Length: 151
Image 1 (tube, one colour):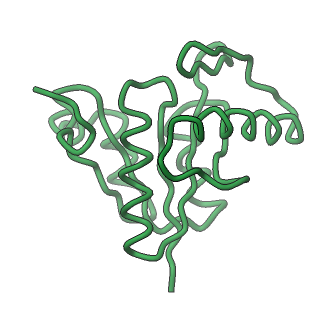
Image 2 (cartoon, helix red, strand yellow):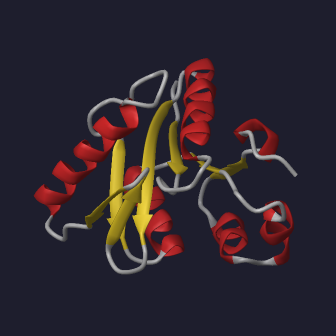
């Protein structure tokens, strides 16, 4: 039986493609279904590899925008992501990830980090730590070396 996996990814982070590909390999091995989530917090603007756009507010336009960003991602991914597999949400990061987990029945949340102190922040009580401690599902934090981030 396949699980629903949510990958919370910042599309403009230098490790975004590596995190997505790592999660795709994990999901393929486990036979799980993968959804990617990008949350736009400030200013309602999405940035990805030099492309910038305003986050739409109505649901139909939001779905259309996600499909456009999915096509941009697929130009860089070894394994393309399917239509509907990328979701965009506007609001605070923890609230939107939590809402997505609840609404979609997510069973595993995958997170990656850029900071060399990601795990310290995770355990010391940053926003991600609060989300992980209170998430109604399992949480996997991908090791920095799996994302090609050097110390």
